[in-house]
Length: 403
Ligand SMILES: Cc1ncc(COP(=O)(O)O)c(C=O)c1O
Image (tube, rainbow, N blue to C red; front, side, top):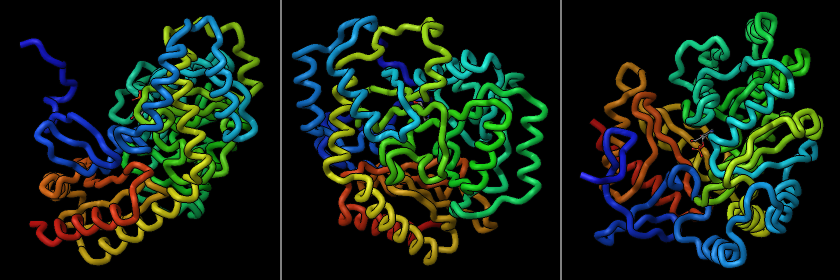
């Protein structure tokens, strides 16, 4: 049979025909409440008229002009992006996906430092192309990657926790044994379990990078663009990366990503990259990003996401207090998680799957990673307080029937 190829075992059902705000609508006309923003992308929900108009206008004017040329839209989008970025960044490359931009970032680090090895977190996910994938969880032994153990801080929700001397020593020993091109991390590892690591842990890593001439690359594909209530997730940790990568939310569903570099890094690699891609700096992607950033700015989303996130987290904490098999409610902005445990206090795959499948009966698409006993929440930023309340009420009803 000729069909779309399913990377996983099979596609989930239903088949969607339309989207409206926080809802996806099936071919049968049934509405489902999407608590995942698609693949954590559609921050303004589905069927957003503003995005549709921005894309329509740009597609009519100029969708693509070839990556060797500039377009006025790409120039304007760059100014817009740099206006909300920390001041150390001066150069931008626009690409289409998070993986592509992460791959670029890691190649840039190799070129700029002349070194090949990377330090990454054991709970990180950096993308699905060559270098990022090799530096992601579920990895194989790889002489070019060192995976830093974060298990001590698993499910930590406390940014202000001070790390001990032993951890600092362990970090420094990694740098003594290896000559890294870069440390490559998500501010909050999302696929690896929404692990909010202590600020002091990431600051100690940053310090070790500076001392040892390694670059700091922040993968902001999922944490960036206000997901955590700050423009960049790393701003919660007071980090000053050399390179940051944005994706997902940057196009609110339209595929666009961006690589931001410090001037020193950009200068070091200028003219030496030797990579040109068909959709690099495409006006269409730039128009989507410009629309997204301008709207986030003009409608005050950073503050709004923080407020909605606090409301969601309070609700998850209430659930945690009410049910012994729920634990470790944690979150920053609209990036939150809850653990589901068995009677021995270990992650429960079965109960997590129960939550996910019962949520479907409430017409809710609930994010989960059953192997980690993890329920995760990355709703569109346009979600209302009433809609958050509705989702929490459904979770409570499900929890009351957990076997
Ligand atoms: C932190 C992080 N980095 C990179 C990627 C890869 O982005 P994309 O799927 O757009 O290639 C993902 C995707 O989930 C991600 O979560």
